[in-house]
Length: 493
Image (cartoon, rainbow, N blue to C red; front, side, top):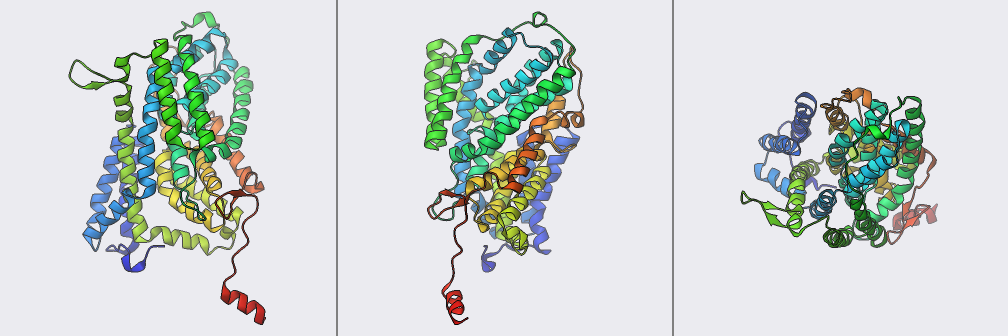
C-alpha cells in the first residue's frame, strides 16, 4: 500500500493521475487506428507527452518526477529491460541465419496445398514465433512468404491470414524469450520468498493451455481450410529458402531446454547465443562480418548491433510505461482498484480473483490496442496484488493474465493492432487479395480458442496452484494465519 503521507497529489484529485495514461491512449488510437502507423517510437512519444502534461497538474512538481523515477528504477523494470536486451541478440541471430527460409523450403518440398498448407503454415509460423519470441516480427517475416504462396496453392486467403496471425500469437504466448512471457512472469512476485515468478516455470505451467488451444486450432485450420480450398499444385510455387538453415533449430532447442531446466533466461539466452554463433560459423550460415562489422558509411553492422537497435524502441516504451506506473502507484490509484476489488467477497476467492484478473487484463489490453507487453506491464502489478490476496501462485497469476491478454485481448476488433498489421500485410501481392481487419478476427482461431481454454481453466480450477510456505506450488491454499487476538477471542468464546 502507498503511504498516504507520501502520496502524490494532483489538482483535481485522482483524475489528474489519469492524464498520462489518457494521453498515451489517445496516441495509441491516433497512430494505430487513424494513421495506421505501427511504431513503438510513436507510442513512446505519446506516453512521454502524457507525463510532461500530467506533471503540470501535480501539487508537487518534483514529487511527480520522483514517482516516475521510482517506477522506472523498480526491480521489475530493470529486470525486464535487461532481459529484453539479452534476448534481442538471440532473436537477431535467428533472423540472420534464415531459419524461416528453412521452414519454407521444408513445407514447399513436401508439396502441401489447400487446407493442408494452411495447417502446416500455422505450425511453421508457431515454430518461427517460438524461435524469435516476437509476434510482430514474425508477422512481418511470415506474411510476405506464406500469404501469396498459399493463395497460389489454393489456400483460402482469410483462413491463411488467420493461421499466420494465430501462429505468431502462439509463439508470443509460449516462447520463453517473448516479451509477454518475460513481463507476465517478472510482474508476479512471491510472497513467501524473494523474487518473482521464474520464466521457465511460468512457461512450463502455461504449456498445457497453449498446446491444447494450438492443437484444436490446427484441426480447425485443416478441416475448414480443406472445405474451402481451391486446388493448386506445389509446382506452381517457386521454392525459395535452403534446408541448411534448419540446423539452427538445434541451438533454439538447446535454449528452450536450458530455459525449462534451469529456469534462468539469462543463462538460456547465453547458451543459445554461443551455440548458435558457433554452429552458424561452422555451417557457413554466418560470417564474422555477420556477427560484428562496420558498414561503408561508417555505421556499425552485424546482428549484435541490429538486435540491440531493434529492441531499443520497445525498451524506450517500457521506460515510459514504468514511469506512468510509478505515477499511478504513488498517486494511490492501484490501491483504490485493489481495495474496491477486495471489498467483494467473491473476489477474495481463488475463482473470483482469477475472474477479476481476466477481466482486468482484457480491459487493459483493449486500452493498449492489443499490444500485450505494455498492457501487462501496466496491469501486472494489479494482477499481482489481487491474485496474491487469494493465495494464488505467481505462475497461475501470470498465466491467467497472459492467456487472456494473448487471447481475446490481442484481437479485439477495430482497436487490435495485430488485426490492423495483418490487414496491412495482405496488401501489395498481385496474386492475393487485400483483407479487412475485422474479417481476419473470425479466422484467428488460436486467440479465440485460447480464450475459451483459459476460461474453462478458471471455471473448473484446471491447473490452479497456490503458493506454499517456501514459494512452491501446492494444490490447496495455505491455512489462514490466526492472530493472537483472534485466538484469544476464540478461547473466550
